[in-house]
Amino acid sequence: MNPDLDLCLNHLKALVGFDTSNPPRKTKESGLLEYLNSLDFIDPQIQDHGEGSFNIFFTKGSPKYLVNVHLDTVPAGDGWESNPHELIIKNNKAYGLGVCDIKGAAACILTLIEKGLSDYAILFSTDEEAGQSTCVREYIKSRPVFEGVIVAEPTQNMAVICHRGIVTGTQEFFGQAGHSSDRRAMTDNAIHKLTHWSENALKVAQSHDHSSFEGLSGIAFNLGIIEGGIKPNIIADHAQVKFGMRPLPGQSHDDLLHEINATSNNDSKFTKGFIAPALPSSGDIKSLELFADELGLNLSSPVNFWTEASLFSEAGYKAIVFGPGDIADAHQPNESIDIDQLDQALINFKKIIQ
Image (cartoon, rainbow, N blue to C red; front, side, top):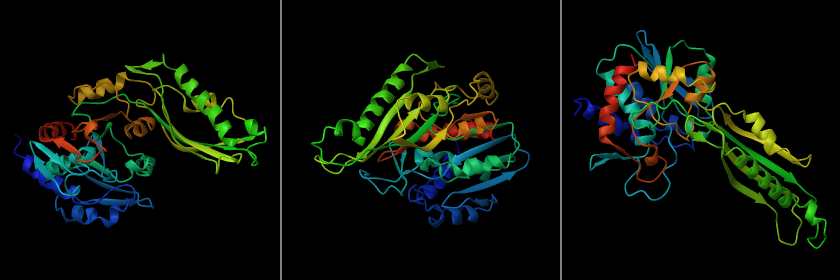
């Protein structure tokens, strides 16, 4: 057992105690900043980007790599068997909101710095769970110089070098209201138009089933929320669908959106949501394989979930995803992480941060 594990769990206990759920994105009011400022072994610099998004950056020496960890979490939700903001240790697992995604990694990093890490550059961000990524996008604008970036997410201490991109948006449809007995409801009803669009969108997604990249195949497509209409006897004059799509590396978001909207006409409107590239953004997987090997990390299979590593990749950095915990344990009541995962992460982070 790593002798630093107890210290790591103490930091994790403190971090879990701060409500950094997003929404409502009130991390500044949570006490987290006061805690970090109270630590005499780091000098956190705050970069405020407004609307609850801010970066916490601290560095020392001449680090080769940047490590990015988001400190916001999803809301606790119902179904917890204990206080989500109280760390519980049971059966070699730690339970609490954010322990897996991804305050466990943050606790490891604070532990290593407290124990004397001489070269490091750490970026704690606060808006990853909002589907916004203002923190990382703004940080990248400063063009910091690093040989590579490690983005912490739960990967079971393996290097993820390939994952899907993300596209979200809202498609609105407009009709002409009237009595439903009028046969023009067949063509003028906004919900009918939405239905035709949805059928085409699903066909487009299915047409890419044979596309693949490094073990990932096809497009993940989801109609998430559909709204429209007032009553069964009124022709709907407005309807909308919020949808999400997860393209493969190398696939053009614009081309896919054009395919999906090929059958739309002037009585529909697309509003962009959150759009970000896949990893690697360029499709060059070989350089990331070499980077992971340089760091001494075992490679993970490609994953379906999206991470902010792709934003660093898009900006020209070698970026991989690495951290303790299993994504299957995140975003749910009684979130947990194996203590052994934290133990191993302390070893790995010590090797790769400097």
